[in-house]
Amino acid sequence: MRRLWLIFAQTVTIALALLLVVSVLRPDWLPRGDAPAPAVQVLSAPPSTASAALPATGYAQAAQAALPAVVPIFTSKAIKQQRHPFLDDPLFRHFFGERPDSGTRRASGLGSGVIVSPDGYILTNNHVVEAADEIEISLPDNSRRMARIIGRDPDSDLAVLRVDVDRPLPAITFARSEALHVGDVVLAIGNPFGVGQTVTMGIVSALNRSHLGINTFENFIQTDAAINPGNSGGALVDIRGQLVGINTAIYSRSGGSLGIGFAIPSDSANKIMQEIIRTGGVTRGWIGVEVQEITPDLSEAFKVPRQGALIAGVARNSPADTAGVLPGDALVSIEGEAIRDVQAMLERIAALQPGKSARVGFIRKGQAIELKMTVAKRPGPDNQRAE
Image 1 (cartoon, rainbow, N blue to C red):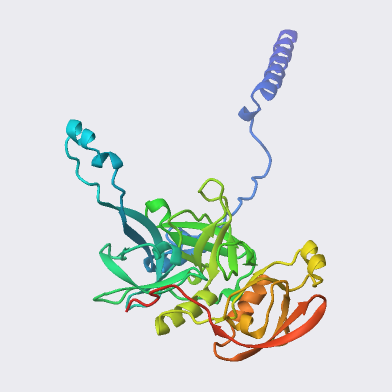
Image 2 (image 1 turned 30 degrees about the vertical axis):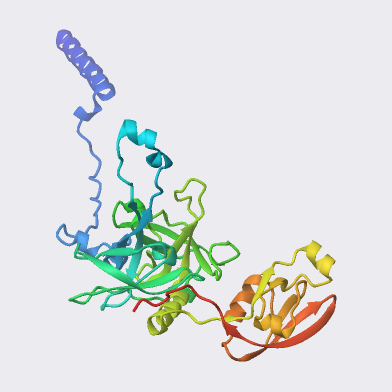
């Protein structure tokens, strides 16, 4: 009996030892008495409809809406090369023979334009086409057509071209640029460096930029969308693909984009474009004065206020000359409206109707005077209308 008890005790001891070892080293071998955990339900769309349920991302729709209406512009101009003086030297001709005259060569340029009507009108920058004697447009169907200038406006740096077409072209839709806000997303579309149609994205960095020395009349949209040489005349569009500006200039020390680009607002561009199409040019008022900003030193020297524009020169026989305006006068009001600076003066005078009389207020040596003058038409470029 004792022997059986010893065997039982040893068996139990060995079994407990094994259980202890297994529970420490391989507890997964032991059965668990816990209740099974509830299954976690994962909510997901069926594979066939998952992608369709996701919201659209990016700006592909805006780009696709605007891209067909933005076209590359290729320009060229014949340049007569000077004859080298050695060609007229008999000794040179004796040793080297007669050399053909170099004659002329063609200088090329590039830019972009925006199709604004199905019958072939294209809006671009004046500086893209002003020096060209041949202008070629690459249309959306990859065909190339020669274009002619309908009219130019150097003061705003805009020009209107036209190509003859046998089918309607895809025209862009104009948006109201006055509805833009700083921070709005915009796309710049053009032909930078001639690499082909390119879309870049950014935001509206600032509005109503002026005093940049780019154009006579400035009211730019500033954007950080990359604009490079070749983008000039291209489209700045909103997230619906509608035109809010014409890309015009960049601030750059290297010639490439530094994230500071400028575009002419669509409201201004549309107004100027319509007048060019209708009359071949833009009619603005002019009184014939050269002006400069009033600095503290000039204000003290001429006894004039800081607000307004200082008259630096008067054109002979101009409306201002006839009315008695003198250098050193400070122009401070037009038709009773106060003038804050030179840019405001230029815009206000440009809005006056040629042939009409206008009241212009000045400060002369500390004294206020008002002169009446008949507004003239602002001189424009030669050959504004080509058809």
